[in-house]
Amino acid sequence: MFNSELPSQAQLPSSLQLLRSTLLAMIAAAAILVTVVLPAEYGIDPTGIGWKLNLTQMGIIKVQLAEEAAADRAKQTIDSAPPAVQALAESPAAPVTVAPATPVAAAIEPLPITELPEKKRDSLRLILGPGEPAEIKLEMKQGDTVKFRWSANGGSLNYNTHADRTKGSSHTYEKGRFQPGQQGSLTAVFDGQHGWFWRNRTDKAVTLTLEVEGDFLAMKRVI
Image (cartoon, rainbow, N blue to C red):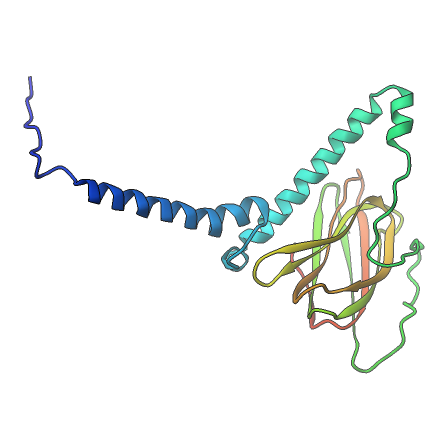
């Protein structure tokens, strides 16, 4: 049998040392929670560190995917419900819009925007396969306004028009499911990144076309 000597009273940590170690561990855990866990899991970034590490963007996408999955489950539940319940669930609700919008035709026509030298204009076209996402952001200052139009060109897309502050919170302007397109205007509620997240929930490829014109510094594809 192996016998080891018990540590003496002097070798054991004191109550003050234990308290100090506990406080340090709590501070480290809180720092990890604020700078890593909240941005990566929920898109909440009070310090701005998560945005620099690309964790906040990942958290926003996770939240959006969870919302889409919940909506899909709710739709499946409604589809399997009795006809009376389906009729009640499908009753139209008051729409929430960014600005007065009109349906977008399949053909892309010139935007009815007055040509002004100080305004910027940009456009892009992407092909999204089944289940594929895309996110486009405009760098804008608070109060800046852009006119926009996007089209799924014969298909439909789920979308989330939102903004991310350079440091901290985010803001949702509007959401929609299985939409052929949209046009209207967007006014920045704060300095930061403003734009759209789309996902193709159909079983075929969709060509996404986006056109913007107005007060913005740059346009970039995030996803």
